Image (tube, rainbow, N blue to C red; front, side):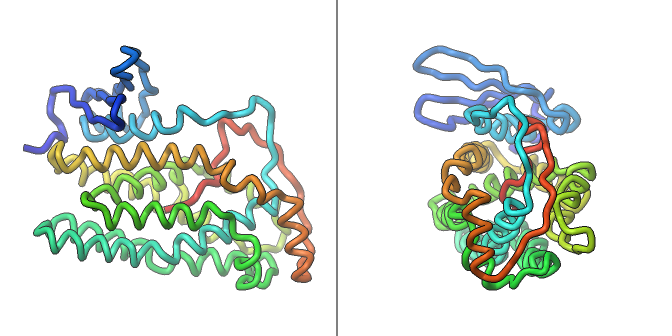
Amino acid sequence: MNIGRSPAEQYVEISSKTRLFAAPDGRSWLIDVGASSVIALPVSTIARARSSVAASLLEGAVAAGLTGIKQSPAATSYTLPRYIRWLAGNYVFAGQTPALFRRGAERFEAFGRPDLARFARQKAQEEQGHANLAYRDLQGLGLPAAEIIRVVQPPSAEIFIDRFRSYVESDQPVALFGFSYCLERMAACRDQAFIHKVKAICPPAARAYRFLKVHSGVGADSAHVDEQLSFFESLTITDLAPVVCAAYETADLLGQQPSIDEDSSDEVTERKLQQKGATLSRTDIQSDEKKNDNLKPAD
């Protein structure tokens, strides 16, 4: 029996000591069994609107994974070097995504799960060619894209690829959908106002926003979030549990990303660009980190 719109609460063990409980109305709680502590997680508009245990679990998992992020109350700057690093990292990551989804489909077929295989192949098709968008955006900034990708890609790009691959090759490859969901869910938070702010830091004549628009709430990612949740609502709790755990782990990895990339500062990036003969013309923009720290890896 699937749990999509079951009236009962469900829980998933996301670690040896931690359980995530969820109710159909969007509420979820993180429970530390050893310490007997309970944390009520934020109720997202998505989970509330869908009224399914599956949506509440997935949305709760992402919220729980993000709780450890230490955010500064001070305003931070989104800069052109940062955007260039983001594009370079996503070129590397997006270049691997379709093949990893197809590999997941092969594993599902071997396990006798054509339903999961079909969905993985659908995801592979959706992501096909996205690396080229990031490449063209770097060119749109007047940069030698191949060289820039080689010298400024952040370390986190390979780490996210390795994490994705580990889910695909695991004993429970269905977890790959939790990884995908978390990244698409985060991407869908980028709205039109955020895209305008990114445009403000780029040269006026640049056409360098193809990848960003596709991986935003303005593009396809909002639809992809709903699409995945509809699929998750058809699964049993046995299938869904690894998906929920992977969503939590991926959100936690996003929280670690700043420390992973701590050596990729604007100064270091600009120095590497200058070594390649690239001179930046930019305007830094101020943004509230808590609200708009949206340059996370895309799906």
